Length: 127
Image (tube, rainbow, N blue to C red; front, side, top):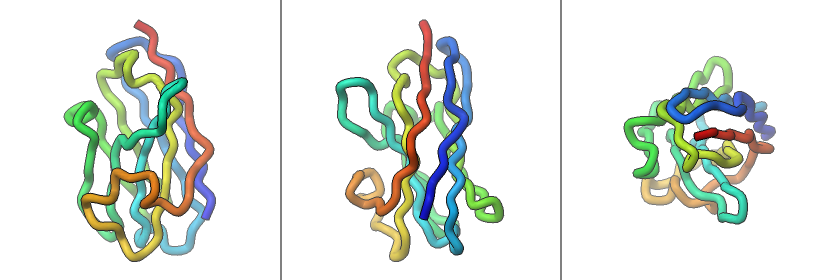
């Protein structure tokens, strides 16, 4: 499985960006997909996840109401729509994938739940 993230860039505070992550996998619908981010000097943390086969979406508290994760199984792609960006959102964003069986809800926010990782997309937010 290969994951290719795109869509990062430099924006001003309050702006929006959409990240995409394209997966090369035969049965994308069977994979739970996650987004994590890592700011300079900090550990990688959970942002959002969408479980496999029409499953639920989950967010870290700091992005609820601003970020939306979605997937297009026909395109083998997961998206992260980010609105009202602030400098605190500035980080490298990584997409991740976990094959079947899908993880329990309480596990989707853990980096150890995922089997595959993309290369990261840099999001820079100026104040």
